[in-house]
Image: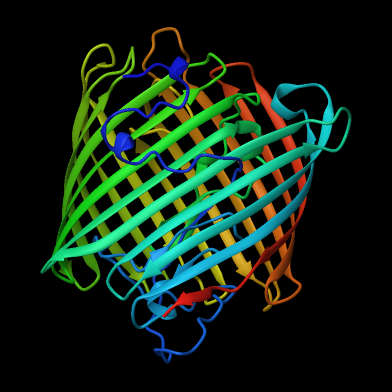
Length: 452
């Protein structure tokens, strides 16, 4: 294990293979949703721009591992790119854009004053994809410049790599790597990160609630998945990965590796079962090993309501062992209509990105979005995080945030957004609060096919 004083030296196994792009920006990972099949386009057609909202989500009760045909984009206001809709054979796309944001912050990082900053967020992506496989390289640097008081520049870099490929009949391989480096205060001004739960994008609390008082940080997350899908209703998945966090101003660091296995089967057209196991190993002082088992069920309550529940016992070694523990996950997704959707989720995670020496984190999130018209949309998001530390004497971190966004599509490629966010840390260190108001102008060029 490398300590934090080694700078950007890459940690355990997978990171040594791919320590990908580090540079300057906070940006969100925008995730994709499953869509109903669309009419195939002709080979010589230019790929269409994603609609403000995807078409009605096809109800999928059993969330089986499958070869993904969607790509997560960095630093754009588009939530997804659906590769199945964009091409019928292998093509290469070059995507790019720019965001310009003016922000006003009140009591940033627990301070007593106010500040305003301008944020420049370009992004580029190179994506090569077919109906069955894909590979992508992406990079999004962000530059924040103080516009009140003494001039100050801050940088944050985000890079990602993803790969998906069938390797044998019914078998597929997936690999994903994401890395960030820079002043963490810039990340809090960037668009929120999202995850997809049962076809509905929901905000990721761990990407928003931690405030590190503008420390320079480095994070890395790498995942390798091997999946076997016997039929649309029966599959197995094996996942291996590691994550690393370091505060580069002499602060803490942590590293963890994990392995997971799961088996999913549909028992009725509306109900699915999932059995799984996991193992986690920490490399830093004060960390511990843990392993557990999970039993889950997913059920389609109605055409617009899906619910999934899962949980099981978790065992930890000394010094973290405090008797029998548990893991759990709860997700409720409500794609209310083509233009409106609501998602609720809660769960426990044993891998954390932005807080060092953590045994586990309990998170909860709620997201609501509605497209009021073809050009105007609103989004409401909130999240909560409670992280239990492995090191004796460190109290549990507790934080939350809430935010509202109003977007106006001025043209096919240009959108104006007004946002408000409230961050609060109430335990685990000096209490901090922050109010942020932002006005953003984003430009995202349409996907450009550069190779047939």
